[in-house]
Structure formats: C-alpha cells, structure tokens
Length: 111
Length: 114
Image (cartoon, rainbow over all chains, first blue to last red; front, side, top):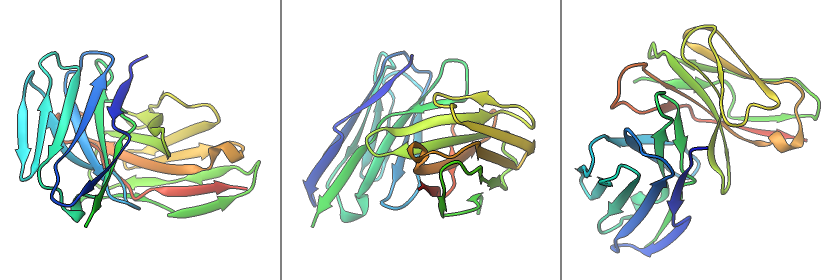
C-alpha cells in the first residue's frame, strides 16, 4: 500500500543551526501537507503544497515539493527553542481526502 | 476559535471493557477521522467518516468501531479493550472540498488499558 516515509527520525541541533527533514512517498501525490506537534500537544497544520517544484516560505521555514511530486522537504533556518517538536508530512490517498502521515521527525534544539 | 474537542484527556480502563471516545467539532466539517499515535509509528488511521452515518475503515480498524449519528460528533468505540490498544488517540476534522485547509486535531485522549 501507499507509504509516506520521513528522515531523519530524530535530530538534535544547537540553537541557531539549520534543520531539514525529508519526506518521501511511494506514490505520486496530488498535494502534500506539513504539520507540527509540540511536546505534549497535538498536530497543527502548517501548510499545503500542490504544484510540482513549489516552494513556500513561512518566516524561517521553507517548504518544497519535488518535481515528481513524490518527495518534499521542510527546512528551518537558524533554529530557535520554539521550533522544538515533531514535524509530520502527510499525503492524500489517491482520490480521497484521507491523508497518510509520515512517521515524523522529532527536533530538539539545544540552547 | 474553531475547535475539535475530545471528551477526555486521560483514561484508564480495564481489559475487556467497552470504551467510548467522543469527539465533537464546531466547524461544520463533513470529514472526521480517528487516528492513534504510537512512538516510532507516527499517526495511523483507524476510521474516518465523510458524512453523517457514513464510515470507512482506515489502516488499522481491527478491534474498533465508530458511530456518526450527528455531523458534529464522531465516536470511537473499543468493543473489548486490550492492552495493545494503550495509545494516544487523536480525532481530526476537515471540510469536504477545501483543499488548502488541512486537518484540525483535537487535544488527544491518552488511553491506558490495564
């Protein structure tokens, strides 16, 4: 069946360093979504990418959708302690509004 | 502020009990979902519903059932709780046709089956 994989599973960075998480789907996606889950919290929707090669920015966060629409990345520039949490990507099952979530990348930022 | 509310934050139940997890959304969303979250496994879909009285199995429906009698409420039922159902349960909703909206999640119910 369709799978969405993320790497790395964990990442520890010093505050001020950059961070990137990668998401790969076994199938072509019509769109991809990213979520952030703070420790002890629930996932919160960040953004959706739809077009091949699309790049979107939210302050220090840059989201990219691959040309083949099978992979995506989230890059955080100059991490801050407020960036701590788990970042999930999610892709829809073909023809539905049902999303399959990646296993997530847990980010720790050391002050 | 739009909300998805889950009835309990923490629950402890005994093996074999019938367990009800309730979820209510106030956004008039058509789609509702139940996920469970386990360390290293991410979020796995149990059941979802596109409309009142409609339900579809997700990836791990065994041991669970659902009920959606009203648009705003989606209930997850553990017919006979087992220890391997100890997990964090997350309810989510989304509008049917709004593509750039994403899911809105509830705060989660951490269920422990002893």
